[in-house]
Image 1 (cartoon, each protein chain N blue to C red):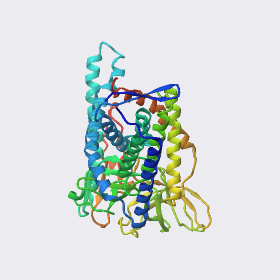
Image 2 (image 1 turned 30 degrees about the vertical axis):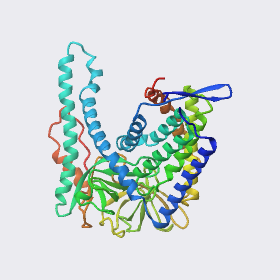
Image 3 (image 1 turned 60 degrees about the vertical axis):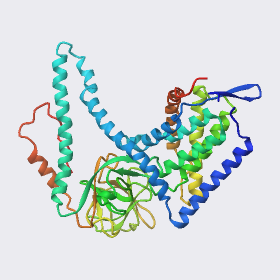
Image 4 (image 1 turned 45 degrees about the horizontal axis):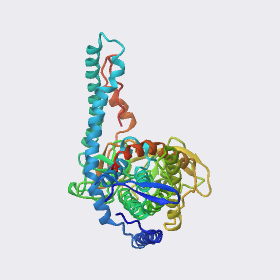
Length: 304
Length: 177
């Protein structure tokens, strides 16, 4: 026999649960408490599944790229199917490995050129469970020396900062989050202002006076004034400038591809980091390109 | 205990479904894990709210307002926990509590098995969920938040489109009477 609660009991329970959560919100705002214990439990529960999921995605992606994606083309010529499949399988594997090697090579170059800077490489294993925030979860935590408010970067530029640390993982607030902000300045005019997120893919630069001159395409780097990021870390490029009173409205395209993050670096100190300039990157690419490129070769990966 | 039983409301008979042991907890953890994982690979799909769909489904199926709202609270608080410290505990919790309660209450009065009904209810609950979140942000957190934008309409429709086949899939977890 299943007892069905009366309507009044349900309403009383609803009121009680809602009231408890409203009080919990009030306590968090008043004391700046963030319910650390509940979060630790939740993250500890989900992190193993996320790790397994990330592992599974890599495997499934590998199987998809190496076999299923080639099935369509293999139908074109029945006679050559076996040989064709084998050749394409090899090419696909090589392309995948080359792309991965390029990506890891860029990361290694970046780390090698900044040997003196203490940093930890991390893999992105999760993201915020909803649109209310823009965060990612990385597979490094307290055991790796990660602490709150440490800056997170890629070889392309600033990504965000560590906002919560657990034993084996940490959460990173992306620059695109509404609550995010980084002290920044325009490279040419040296005008300073915070760059923050709006919850959208683009960033905004705030508090730039209406009579200041800002041109589209101008680079923005960190100013170091926020005491989190070192100076001169690329933040983005000015995408659009609209007049406003008393401040201009400036939209910024992030330097790092924040929508496709797979590996990042957590800076353990505030020492300056050396980023490869665009001209140097192009010259490096030209030097590393083979003299004769076969027709079937994969397109060169874009390096930072 | 029977696996299913009927609620009598006027002349209508509405079946209350039970599920295999552990299936609700398993589906909840899976939904939260997927919600936290797939934006890493497909950022454009971050408007999908799997925990909300799970709350709606189990609310409509279990048809018990008390368990519906408690399940909504649990899922919402877990989603808050996984959304980082900038999201206070209770933001998703309050919204999903209301959705869980209303889904169970409506499920106890109407037959919600038809795909069209499920689609319409999912759209409605998605809009309600967003409305409660905006209300919470504006009133309790003093954060300016727009009431309506086109993104909401698209997201509501997309979640409902995903919800219909997902609910059919979840129907397989029901214990037959």
